[in-house]
Length: 213
Image 1: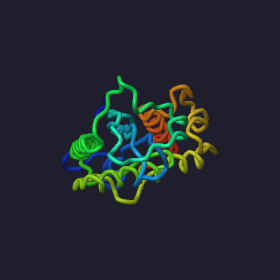
Image 2 (image 1 turned 90 degrees about the vertical axis):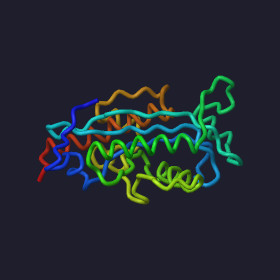
Image 3 (image 1 turned 120 degrees about the vertical axis):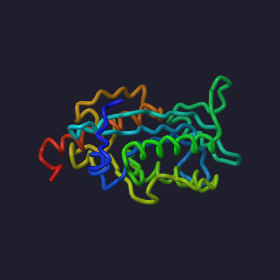
Image 4 (image 1 turned 30 degrees about the vertical axis):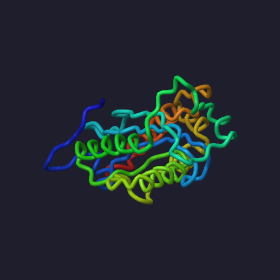
């Protein structure tokens, strides 16, 4: 856990950096592409924090395997792509509602610590993960979804600008971040690599004089 700047008079550097938004990296592995009908199989959230020098880094990671919601769809193509077996007898998973409530509480606690008013989702092709988070929140009538309903930071776009690469593995390689393709398509691994990529881009921009103004 990195040191935090949380002066109650000046506000935290992190809150000031992102307009009082807390960036939270999300990666979701699913049973298909339709957020309304297809199951969430794994989810990971990486909370970011900023030290007293304004350097962004990983603070904590949440990961959980998810029991598909009743009536959800799981395609064979998705399982082949991710390598996930949702029916494995030793798979430790929790209900989607419980997982989302736990994750939302973790995000709310981090918002309070960092003096942020709202969270903003960071993802690689963020629209995909954002859609599943919003759909699950609505499905279980969760009233305290901490994420902005439509705004997000997309590392596919940012890495395309910064490194000329939009695929996560290639963007990490261009950024000098180790990436093991054998570990890919695990929500925990992809979320942490996306977090490293996002932090690297933000910190590089600071070194180049882009922030603070």
